[in-house]
Image (cartoon, rainbow, N blue to C red; front, top):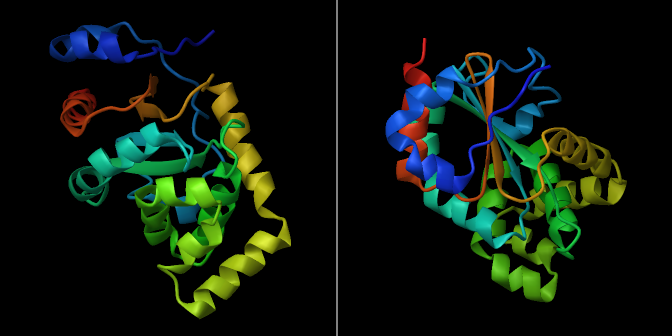
Amino acid sequence: MNRRRTLAAPLLLGLLGAFAVLFASAAPQAASGVTDVDPHKAFGSKTAPVIMEVFSDFQCPACKTLFISTNRQLMDYYVTTGKVYLIHRDFPLPMHAHSRVAARYARAAAQIGKFEPVEQVLFQNQEKWEQTGDVDGTVATVLSPAEMAKVRALVKGGTLDAAIDKDTALGQMYRVNQTPTTIFHSNGQTYPFSGVMSYDMLKQFLDQLLSQK
């Protein structure tokens, strides 16, 4: 039976200088660990040595913090350089009244090639649409009328929930119980991390993963 090494925040903080020991004790994951990837919501090279699956809720304040504090640098230094394949996974929490609606709009935008600006505007304006429920109006500020018409048609089509539910089911398989949760895959091993990781911590973690042969 394969085991997965869970890197809780306090543990990771205490072991930044001893990653080699941590990695040596981790068990290999199943070869089919990454499935059902929506190419519209995945970035970088599929053959990158590290895969990151980020289970996220657009209405989650911690998810906003992770996005704002790490996303741009992660994209610039690891994703676009072919070191990390980044996958966004929807994991709307039942406690958040508008998170599933936001996930629908983001997924619809992804299908027309506009995931990144919509992801950014949803996180940056989280407090506003959380209060009003106006996800549609928030998304409309970064899309053209023609693009918005396509997104609304996809949202109203009712086909997006199945894909969101697939991500949620996958998260449950990984035992995700909070957002954000990031699942790192490298060299046949899986490392789940729950919570916000600063960019400095993430950089040290990724560099250590990339140094493993």
